[in-house]
Length: 479
Picture (cartoon, rainbow, N blue to C red):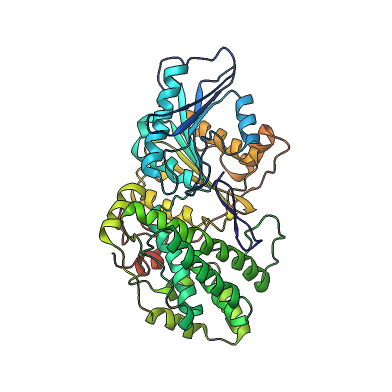
């Protein structure tokens, strides 16, 4: 499973470590259940689970982000309960570990495709292959969908990083840039946000930033500034399913949840994970030159909360936004932008159906990521192939087993019929009950706001009717 942000304790990221298209040839069916493990030529591990009465469909599962130094087993399902449900329904499940950890898309995609080859060599050709994945695995899945559509019949991204790599690192840079600028003063001005030399350097910068954020939480002005930084990344005010949903306009409770999430972002993704990605890209792949943070905040769903917290603190929001506007900006390394664009940015040019599912209260990959991918798909003219649905819950990838199986069934129906019938929230909830009556069924009608800084292969300045001002005013110059 991918990493999941929790609200307690200080280390706010708890450890989740985080196909062949249809052919006329009949699929081979296993005579009895089989569990096979092995190693690919790349060194990646793979796992294959085939039920005794295989239905002819293979589900290629791409797992979430695994940091360096963390165990990296092969995984073929998000969790044991979902695996059990799918095997009982007759699906074959396959997946690999990827040959490396971290921002490993250049290893993950070929390793996943090689795992399909291993499966076909042992069990025969599948009638249908569906790619699916969670969190960072949503990026891997969508990469397969866009670049290797001949291998699959469709794809399912759950809580996926479908905004792509550049948009991810740009948006995360915005949050820590605001924290350093507004909280740092003399003591924090030396914190480096990019160009991290090694893992030790990244840990040191993260530690210094953590201390700033923790200290700031003790004052009303500090809390307002943390809320501003959180709003630039679209961190939701309810993001931990183990805590009650704040009542509307309870700005203090919402800010408290954003604070713990901000600590989690600082502790791991914004520095440690960034350093690993920079090492692959050959430099800094993100920038904030030309970004209008007043416009970004204006379009955030948390703008009112920020305004109210500033008012309660007696601090001028206009003054702090002016300070952000005047602060020295960060430029990207062109070579690193080129590498990230070539490996981890989406064109939107789907040729098979894709269903995206996201929780509404996700603090690690905010639900606005879906708006970014919808933009790319719309620019590419492939809107009919994409559907995005939402689960009303807090947390990262906090789906019930039945909600995941229901999404797969809806995608299968789209593949078979050519229409997205039965994929509305009420129909999805009914599918949840049919798949697993014990599972929560929380699909809801929902429309995420615009992603703060969309970026795709159509270019950062591509016109976009849905995101109007944000697309025009915050894309920035690059690099």
